[in-house]
Image 1 (cartoon, one colour):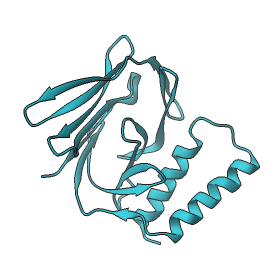
Image 2 (cartoon, helix red, strand yellow):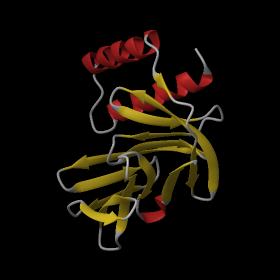
Image 3 (cartoon, helix red, strand yellow):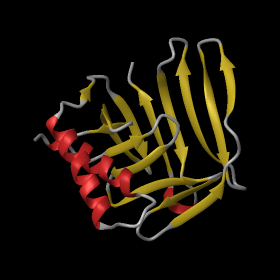
Image 4 (spheres, one colour):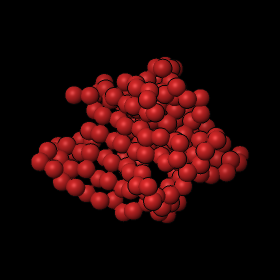
Length: 175
């Protein structure tokens, strides 16, 4: 199995465990998910995305796995995106993975040393000549998530602030 595929499996596994307690039935289910993912070819796209997280840059490639788009590279950098929100971040010079979960209107960003929870607003759409963007603001300080879509319906940019000292990540489709 390639290093990139192993990383995609790890990110998918992290996303599946992010807001639950771990028990044997869940472990068996997660193991089956990983087995099915490894046995099937994940959807691979040679499109490049440029990512920046807390001053570290990376070139990432998108893979589709278990309902997530996992942007990853051979250096150990990976980002899991569910179509609206980034759900986990690995690498980028950090040993500590970041996990993001939603409960109702509250979004929590959690690392091993920091937890930031904020209440989020409804998603707002703003139209442009060449497409539109969805924006959601969380917390009193306005930590926003922005997903930009071009005129063909393709996502071209994702930016998400995690709050506190957890920083902001930005991904842009390389054109």
